[in-house]
Image (cartoon, rainbow, N blue to C red; front, side, top):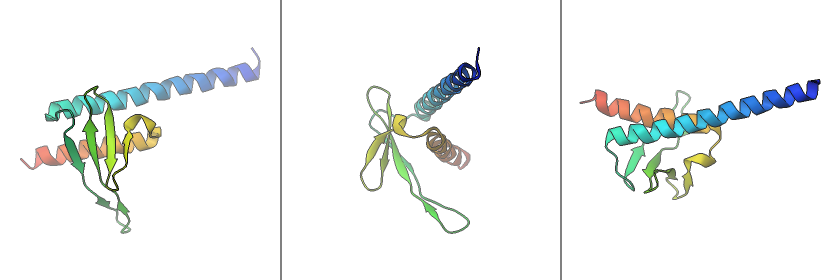
Length: 108
């Protein structure tokens, strides 16, 4: 096996692992929203975050459609399926959704 075959195999392995990660993130969000009691087409509001340096990270709404696909609706009205986000942005959305849920459960 030459070096190019080895490199291609490693790239394929990493691509496969990233696909697994993305699927797990999406399935975890769906399961958590279901546990949270969110119905299809209902919106979960994720508020703006102000970072220490004063920068504001925009909030958004999370929606589940009838096919159990997740969409993100931004304040400007744009709605995008979760699957179009890059893996790191998808993970950030995952964290913000779960932070919102934890905040609500800990305040009760």
